[in-house]
Every structure is written in C-alpha cells, then in structure tokens.
Image 1: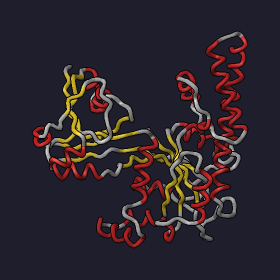
Image 2: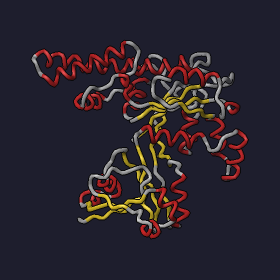
Image 3: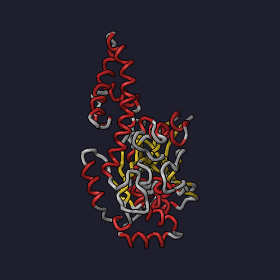
Image 4: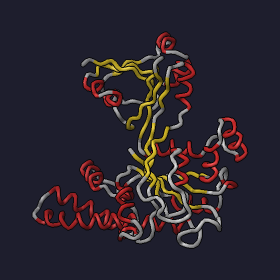
Length: 364
C-alpha cells in the first residue's frame, strides 16, 4: 500500500519526502527535478510499541512501515502530456492514496511555477488535471460499454449507468470520489475503474516556521475550500521539519519543537494520517525475542492477520490469544493479564482491533 506525494513544482514535495524517509531525493529550485518516483519505506511512529518495549525488554523491535512515493510536480496540461504529465499520472495511478502538498508560504527566493502564491488556484490546477485524465478514461470505457448495453446486457447497463454518473460529476469539475456507489456491484466496478480521483486524499499545507503551530491565512483558505471533502488538512513547516531531522540527538529535536510550540514533529502526525488514509491498522506480537508491529487492513479477520506473519499461519489457523494493548500496558505482563482474566481466545471470525497484542495457534 503506497501513498503518493503530489503537487505543483516547487511546493516542497521532495523536501517533505526527504524528511519522512531520510532518503535524499534531489531537491532543487526548478521544476522536473524528480523524474523517477522515489519510494521511501517509512516507520510509523507509535508510542504503544515504545511501551511494549519497556515492559517486555525484547532483543529487537520492529515498527510498522508505510510506503511513501515522491511523484514529480504536475503542471497545467499534464493530462495532455505537458511537462512529464503522462508519466506522473501513471505514477499516481499506482498509489493507493494521495498526499497533496500546497504551498502556503511567501518566499521571493523560491520561484512559484504560476508566478504567485495561491493554494486555492494550485489545488484547482491539480484537481482539474486529475479529473481530465479520469474523464478520458471514463469516455474510452463508455465507448465499449454502450455497444454491449444496447444488446440488453444487464451487467453492461449497470456499468453504463455508473460511468455516466461519474462522467457527469467530472464535467462539473467534481472528483469521482463524490459519486457514491449504490450497491456492491457498483463498489466492485468503481475499484475496477482505477480512477485517480477516487483515491482518498490528505492535504498538507506547507507553511513557514512562524506558522508551524497556528497556521496562517492561506491555511484558513484551504480548510474552508475542502470542508465538504471529508479530507484531513495537516499544517507542516516542511523546511523546518527538514532541519529537525538533521539534529543529532532526541533532546535537541525536542528543544527545537518546544521553541516552535509543537509536541512532536509534524512529519509524525503526517505519517500516522497517511497510514489511516490507506485504511491500515496495527496489531502487535510481543515476546523476548522480538516486539513487532504488524500492518493489516482495517476489518481483517484473525486468520488474515496471522497470514501477514506467514501464509502457513493463515492456512492452519486454530485460534488467536488476544490481549487489548490497554490491558497489557496496565497489568505489565502477559502472565498478569492472564491472572486478571483479561486474555481472550478468539476464533476465525474475530475482527482484529487496532492495538491488539496477539499470539496465534496453528497446525500445518
């Protein structure tokens, strides 16, 4: 599961990517500096794993990770191949969610591709390019489906109805995600279409250092604009975050954050939000050899979760022993949790909850 960072050139995408992944993507003051998409595997900050480490004292700790993709800047006309448009749009299509970076700071030394800072216009530029690409996809698909629908093919008629509703939305400059599937057939079709504007989106307002804690008038404009989109808006001073990652010690980083009025780096907030955006959650295994966070989809059953460790665990699943993280933290050990009667035995139908500490019994 991957989240792709998108935006116009020079809004801070590559700097943000470097910040998140500690990879060093080239970051320069001109467009098209990122051509191949850079992929960073990023640890998901989670205080719960620190608590489990403290209690269990394992030999090693492994955190959950999320893949972040740095996609080059889109420009007007990208849907028609302007700039490196086709390649960028293909890279976005391969991602499962979008982190849309908007420039919300003034700085005469950093060129804006459209000559002035205006996050509302920038957002619309990107949205329109993505919508135009989706419109092209929908119209091509409609050409085929219309022929089949005329013959009385019921499945084709269902698809035709959905495609026409999406087309109508796109023509009104609305994203495909605003079209709600009416039933399971439409849900499956929607997934099959692989439209860019159905992907969930998270907005990052890149501000200067002074606005890191409180935001600014540009951020207020963005919040107002996206209030009906059911999308999260995160405020991040990307340049400052990059400076924080360069500091040697945890203490130095904390002092820097306190000076800014922040409790934790904005990048940590963003990584957790991206994880949630991808509909991912975490369960833990906790033993003296290893404390580990495992990534699963929200709604996964216990056998599915076991299969993330090894396919044999899913095939031969018998049962799962489950402790809620809060109980493990409160009682301090597995033995004390058992004594308190808080360890549960769950079967194949159990839907795993975020933060469950699990041990699987299986037979192959």
